[in-house]
Structure formats: structure tokens, C-alpha cells
Image (tube, rainbow, N blue to C red; front, side):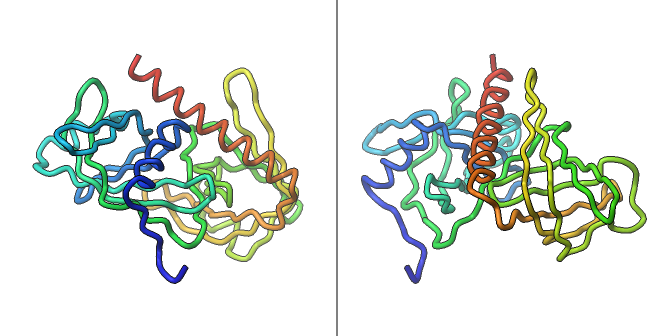
Amino acid sequence: MSEAERIKGKKREALLRQLKTNKTLVNLRLLGQDYSRLTVVTGIRTQNKISYFSIDCPRGFEKAIGNVDVWKMHFEFSGEDGVLYLFRAVGEEVSNREVWVRFPEFIEREQRRKHFRIKLSPGATIHFTKDSTQLKMGIIDISLGGILVMIAKGIEKAPVLNPGDELKDIELVFPTGEETPILHINKALVVRSEKDSSTGRYRYGLQFINIERMEEKALTAAFYQLQRQLLMKRSRVYD
């Protein structure tokens, strides 16, 4: 394809129904507002010949739209094919913890793959050795392509990692209640280093490279388990 594909009509509705069935995480952003949350599609209906879909009302949404006349919303999600999908739509009603949104005119499917990211709760860590020194960092977010991490202790005077550094024999630890899964990654490349203005600590973007088939399967399983845990956590908030 030379341009992004636009999905319309019945294919557009089928894709929204698939999101509902699979409980796929969708990132919602209110245009013109500093508001972005993960949510899921919960329903589809037609009223007065207008098609709507509903999403689980994220925390803080009603406050965010308090002074907004038109709820202009941007959605994006990673499809089963690993490709980014995105669309814009207008919200109309909040009812029974659901936000009802008009069907978009079309859903755009990007040409290239883009990995969906999940922000992690404190406790997830990465362990590796660099220059004979064992390092431990907290994981901020993760995708199937890499992670964003921050040094776990102290305030750094200088970065300990630099873009281009290659890390080997990495362990990712995800505390999940009774279990603590440990994932092994053979290699990762440091692709970004930046100082967090609020903490003074450095953050690093790591890209998984030369990942073996077994590592990829384990990473995919862990990623979707984290998605399920996030959905369960969100549902408990409203119980």
C-alpha cells in the first residue's frame, strides 16, 4: 500500500465488534485536552438510524469533559496483525459507566507495524550486567518490541546507558500477586536516553533485538497476561 488503508461500512463495524469480543485495549485521547486513558469497547447499537459504540468510562473522563461542548476523541489500538489502527469520533452520552460514541466515518490502518504499549505498576524490574556491574531498573512501560526503564535507586549525575549500547542476558520480572514471572531476553539495544525533568533520573528506551522464537512466544504470553490483569484491575475499581 502507498497510503494508509481506510476501513469503512460493514468492515468498520466488524472491526469494532472484534474489539468488543477480544476485549482489546484501546487508547483514548480527548482532543484539545490533556487526557489519555486505556479502555475497552463494551457495546454497539443503532438509534434513529445512527450507529454508536460504547466504551468503558475511564477514570476522570466525566471531569475531563466538564467544560467541553463537543467530545472530540482520538482512538488507537494494535490489531491482531500487529499493525496500528486509529480513528476519530465524537462522544455523545455517558450512561451506566459507559461512554456512547458515534461510529467514525472510517478507521485508518497504518502501513507499518507499531507495538502497543502498556504502562506497568511499580514493582516490575529489569536486571542485567554492564561492564561487570549488575544493574536493576524499574520498568515504566512495555510493548512487544521493547521497554522504557528508569534506574531503580538514587538520582544519577550522568547516564549509565547510552544510545547504541547493547545489553545481553536480560531478565524481566513482573510481580503479579501470587506469581512472579521472570522473562529472559537475549539481547536489547539502547535506542533512547533522556532525563526526567520531574525526578532528575534518566530514562532509557530499549529495543529487543535478535529475539529468539521461544523468547518471542514467552514475551507475547506475558504481554497479554499484563493486558488481562490491567482489565481486571480496571473492573474492580468500579465494583
